[in-house]
Length: 257
Image 1 (cartoon, helix red, strand yellow):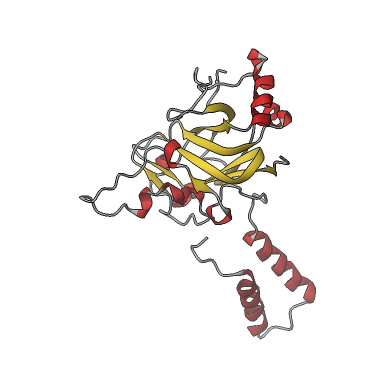
Image 2 (spheres, one colour):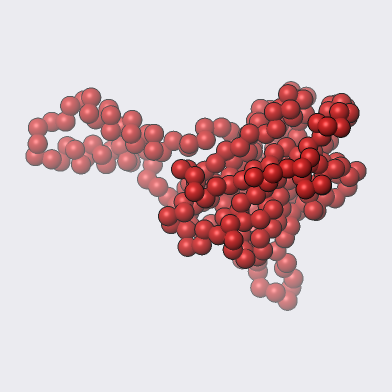
């Protein structure tokens, strides 16, 4: 089934950081090794809190797309896919879209897309009422080519399940409420699915944080539609001829179905 979507303004770790206990122990060792008088307990507690805050994930939400938590790439809805035949060498890990579902975003550890556009189909481990989507990239200060960062993106949801279809029909019965993007109501590679636009987002390379979270359309949150498959469409990037998608996260609540 083809759907349509409103004018839309398409407006960090296997790097092996030291573990928390190691950092805390190291801080104590440095402080204790000084020839100065003993460090006050309150100061040590402050150091511990600062280190803990730096190690804490800034998003603080479960990532249902995380590969280690059961998220998987849906190849039928992913483009471009690496081409590998018996006559070609093995596919480079950089071309594997699964990279975008891992929590290791050290420099270069991204899904390398040989163009400015692409899309990633994601199978979630459970059906989810989505609330937010997060895009990770490396900071502008350490990026060799920040133009490879994705800029405008669309997050689509695949409508599936009898109850969900009923909610979808109820939602779309109000034509003016049906979200669309650039006159489309489905991503470029759509298969035989019905879609609805969950969010349009713009990653800002100049923002204070290189990890940015965006809200799902509040009307869809209110509709209680649930999704087991989502598609992230990259509409363009920040000016390069190729794109690097470091990580996409899908947040929400487990659907009670």
